[in-house]
Amino acid sequence: MRTLENIQNKIISRENLSEIVQLLDSQNKKIVFSNGCFDLVHLGHVEYLAKAADLADIFILGLNTDASVKRLKGDTRPLQDEHARAVLMAGFSFIDYVVLFDEDTPLELIKCVQPDILVKGNDYKAEDVVGFDVVTKKGGTVQTIELTEGYSTSSIVEKIKKAQI
Image (cartoon, rainbow, N blue to C red):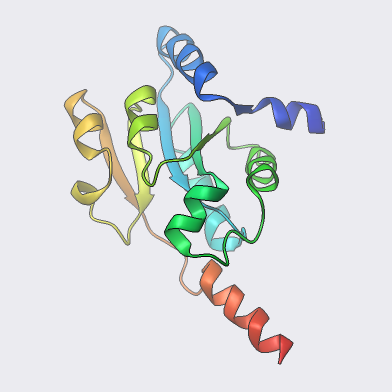
């Protein structure tokens, strides 16, 4: 049974990330990495993340900080703070580690993790994914996963706004 403490232990610092990745590499674990804001988690997120996790032994998720989300999505976002989002993501059994990043892209995290597989949604072309060159240079792959139609944070926000009228 997972306790809140066990879930919070899955949220790691960048400093601990290098150490953990070294250990995983020494154990020949296949690492998958993905990233996102995950501001309002919905079915599309869960299905995407579960499919990504199925590709490897260890799934590391890069999560945008509040400042990063605000720069990417605008002043009204995030709707949930980074601590709440990190705990929520770490609560999924198929996510092994969550690490926050403040940059606009996860490139520095990808360089640190050196994942075997980098995953994004199929709204991207693999070769356009940030980190493509880093991952493929070391022999890894970039895979896109089909997104679940009809689910997006933006559409949920719009529904909420309409319900307020």
